[in-house]
Image (cartoon, rainbow, N blue to C red):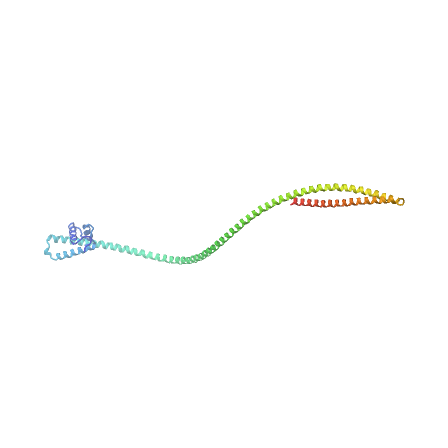
Length: 308
């Protein structure tokens, strides 16, 4: 079944139209006449059927008129000429193609030889490249191994750095607490020092007041001691006079008992008074020594507080 909407009748009309124009009814000419429709195989099949029908009709010359016979003769002659021209052209083209192919074959043979040499060089280079590639592959494997080891070391180093960072942060936290404790200790020490300073100043003031009081007491006691010394000197003088009087009385003892008895009484009285004054002077001296020791102790404390 014909494709593209053509049939045998259409092909027949196109064939006759081409023949009427005096052109060769080739497949391409018929297809152009049909408006470039239909497949070449279908057109060739219809043309073959038309040729078979024409050959069947040409066998019976009685059925053909003379003009048709002349036309057929001209067409046959034209076909032979065109066929001969086509054959000659094809032969010339074929010989030219053979020469080109021969030259091309020679060139290809030479090129094949060159390519063979190049192939050998390339194979040698390929062997060298393969060796280099193997070396590079081994180097790459070594580098991969080194990279893996470096990655492991980096991971270990990273973990160690994190641990060190945590330790540093812990130390910084401890240092901060220590600094705060130190500041608190300094403040407490300063406060304690201020309190001690105030207490020392108060104690110094108290000791200075006691020293002033002791100095006043010592002055009074020294006045009393001076008076006692004067009284003692007076009593000693009186005792000397009494002894002298006693001696005088002793010399006069034989002369008068009454005078001696009076003198003895007077001597006993004076001796008692002298003993009383001596005891009082001794007590005053003890008090002065005690006050002197207290004064020296107070002065020592004042010096200690002043130095500290």
